[in-house]
Length: 123
Image 1 (cartoon, rainbow, N blue to C red):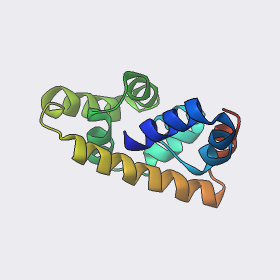
Image 2: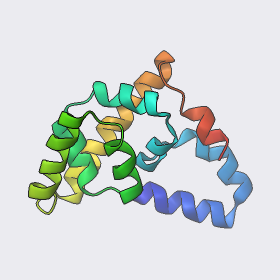
Image 3: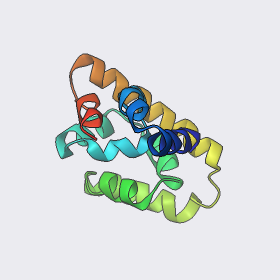
């Protein structure tokens, strides 16, 4: 949330600086820039508990994008978690899980398995 606020303020106050810095900052919401195949690859490397915790406090758009790319059994597990425990999941725990997912995305980007940085550059 802090990153989002900072980026939003910079974009508003200094669009030129925003263009320079944005490709270097990966937000959890940027996950929606991935193709279906890329997000499926990311999810296949994730623990469903981590994914569920990350989604507990995420935007509906992000949640829907990820849920649409899960297998039926994975979707059932994540949905069940969200129904039963999303109210108990703290924002701090959710942000930690999101950071873990972002680290995985950066790792996959560095290996060339997925391509998110160029998509951020196009924003």
